[in-house]
Length: 481
Image (cartoon, rainbow, N blue to C red; front, side):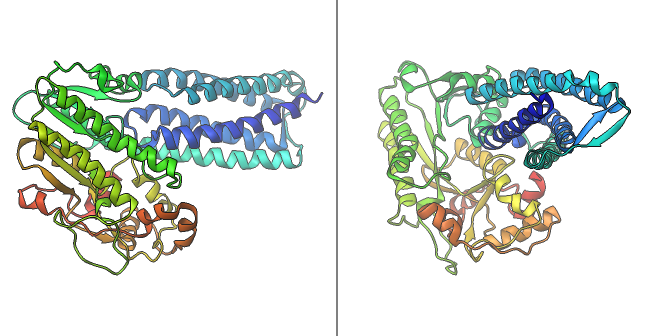
């Protein structure tokens, strides 16, 4: 058996497993590049990825003889130390999902195997004259070379993300928010989403006691450093418990697989079903909350065809389509709490801009220098900076009536203008149009979220005296990027 070739084959497997781990866990499910607590982890990932890039490219077509074999052994040792350090940092900063733990275990075993095989051949290589000997292995070498390029790009991406998080930590944070003058007991649903995380930390900083309803209590407790009470269902909260304010943010991610009947049912259950359970608990509670802030979305208004410039306010009604029906039913479920003397405010969120959420993926083409209009680009895009969104909640906390409130910035832009501003802030070109039909073909009705839009104004927030810290997109993106 040629153990060198076997080691290269195991390296190829490592490349496939590593790509899955990076894309599925680090980018999609865990969203590490936008998580402030992941800065050190991202820095370690960046160094490891660049080492792996050099290993993949170097070993794809060359034999390391003589002193080069010593260099390779040193690189192996550094990689092992970094891997162990990475394990320690991960366990200190977040609770890994089961799939990521399994993937990391397999990666460690596979990596140990190919490093051991290459190290076994090092004795023979040390006895040879110092040289890099050209020794390609056909398609295997080509695949390893491609893996090297991919992991190198991943390392650069993680390095830039770590640097961005460091800059965010260094800049002055937003002023501390006040959620009323008295300490409150607050129930938050959807607390582990990127909006919920910001809200819970702001509430804790203001001295409130927070209970979190989540499907993953252990992960939530880890996320908030055991400073919140975490429950898995409303049945775990006794009716005698005093809750002063409910903030209902629960809802499965709406962008994703096509809206099949099963997916529509899941979206309804995560929003409407959860809201009904919260209201049922309020009905039985001995002490009724004074306020319920419940999330909704500007999808309530349906869509506006490209070229329609009508400004929508809270006075406008829904349309007969799924996204509109979903928001309407969600709000109706929340308003049921008003029958128990609770002031209910439904917050219709626009596109929320933050270091997590949809913005990083939206800006990826722009960052790569391929920004341009999507599907014509005339569709309206109503957005809000996440800091203004949290401040808007604090504003409603201390005053204001119930009913619907649009949470969007005063400035609306077309999708094309949004990308132009992003390209200017990022100092990238704006030139590449993207047709909308492939998205329509892949996503069906869900494509309306991207290819159609709504021009929504925060009429009630402005009329009530709320002051936006980021009213214009250029300033909002400069703050985040």
